Image 1 (cartoon, helix red, strand yellow):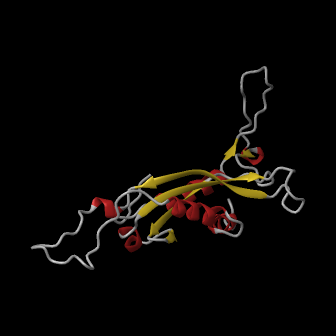
Image 2 (cartoon, one colour):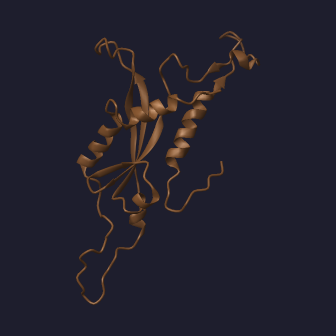
Image 3 (cartoon, one colour):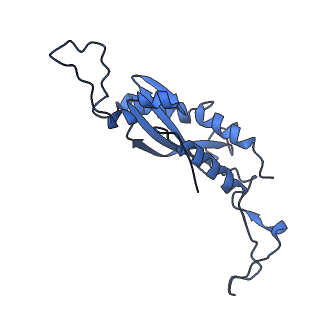
Length: 181
């Protein structure tokens, strides 16, 4: 894979969404041998079985790039937003079918589940801290954040991705608009 990107940009969402769509279009050759025989597969691709069956409700996971600047959360940030990010996270989300113990209205419908949350060093951490000369007042001089993320910000990110009608559902609905043909 050859991917050309601008400096200070993260191709993670692009790679994740294209991989998601590729897995949806992947088909496996149908087996024609029995369990006790050596594996033998049908070479007719018209009878191939999809890796992710559309009627099963399962879909491959996808990863979103999420940043925080102060108490603000940004999804799919631009290069300028990444440059001032306090924290950058890769949030991976997958689907599962709700068990029958849920209410009848939600039973059998796919729901989102958090699979992983990973932090990425923002470009601001790579920059040296701004300094003033000769003891001048440093009011208005931007300095990169130090330390980790607040738990409340992490919780807010996860909630915005997983909540019904949230960003995760919007991305999933957008991906459903693509066909494998």
